[in-house]
Length: 129
Figure 1 (tube, rainbow, N blue to C red):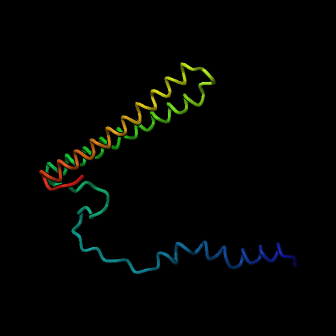
Figure 2: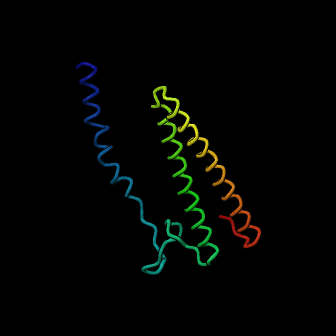
Figure 3: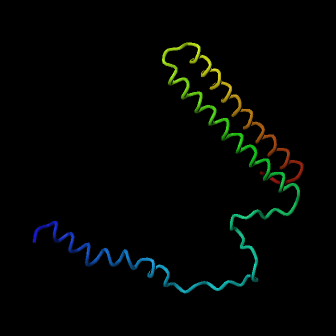
């Protein structure tokens, strides 16, 4: 019996059954009893749990700034692609450079908007976003 055949035999006899039985073995632990009432939303499940207006405003600000940051980053990537594919055309290259500079300025503005909103919410309402 050569090495390849021994490896296949070992794989078929030992490793494959272990991989096939892994979900059964992992699920064999005793389940934890749940003491929450029926229909209750579990904590930490990714659901929104803020109960006041300021908490809602902070979540909206965080989502809006994050979305705008993603859009500005995509604009920067598009401008980089334009610059890379300009092919020696000075007009296209300068337009792409201007877009890159504007995207960086936009990211700086978004950063300062986040800092300002965080400062306002923490100093006035004692809550951070």
